[in-house]
Length: 66
Image (cartoon, rainbow, N blue to C red; front, side, top):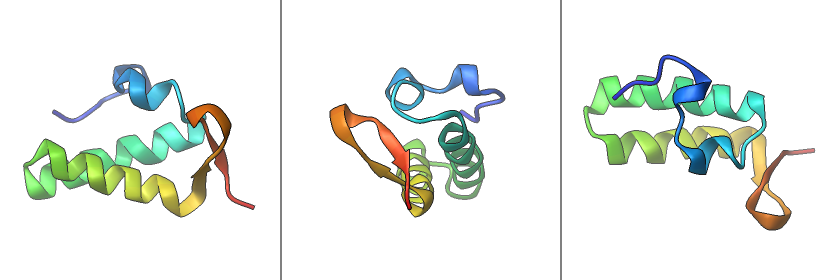
């Protein structure tokens, strides 16, 4: 199920990622879901894309890498 807006992202994504991270997640998820047709794989690809620019900080929130 591709996401057409950031508001559609699951709470476990939108509650911990800043807006730019959410945008990365959404684009990567949509691309992977289209390519692999498996939601589980799309989630893994999307989180991997986020981890290229962001890292987990305190309380489970993510911050931009320095």
